[in-house]
Image: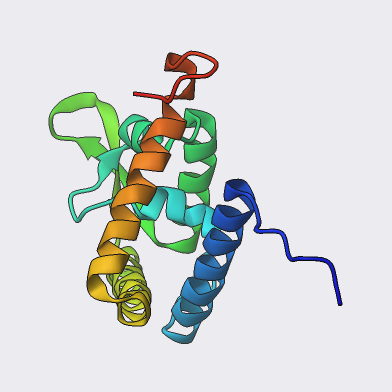
Length: 156
């Protein structure tokens, strides 16, 4: 008889989940015509709509430092996924705007992610999966606010 299996901690579980989702997502994106896109590019592409966004807004929404977002935008410009264009609301600012290739990747990535979620909803049951996502969002929000709670208090 072996030792009882220990349940992995939250960090291990969420890290494994993220890596497994990224592996499937980026393998399928490569099959669908986007072999050069990498997981790090998702921290920009996931936050773009057709009209684009300022790098500072992408940084705030993604939680990435502005310098990292700038580096990733440079890579995506080089790969042909985005351009930098003047912001119509502020001539001093630039917007990161997806190209046709970028929009194709964004559309395909969202469809792949929706299919992954659908598969899990079918496995767990739609209501159970929805409850899981709700609780995971609560945990994530609480974790993001960890500094605002006391040492033994749950985050608000």
